[in-house]
Length: 98
Image (cartoon, rainbow, N blue to C red):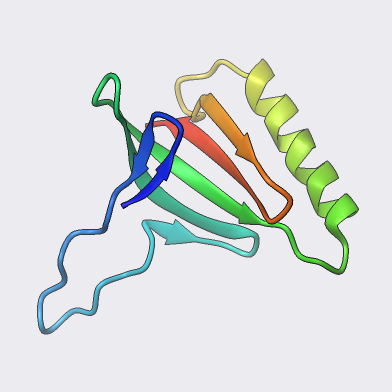
């Protein structure tokens, strides 16, 4: 599994011969969501991987920063809470409570 500080991105369950294995829990225009587990507590989280494209990194990063700002302010039972944030020049990973 892929490692981030204190988190493991878990492999997806094995697929049956009739159904191919998906590469993520879900995907969208900007990234994919994978299941991860915190090493220290064993708790499961959703890791949202957002790749930064080379053409317009400033605009994309501003959009991600806006999403992070909103998630930090919201506390609602139907909205996933932001637990952790990892960032590099190539991608941003939002770790969200399930």
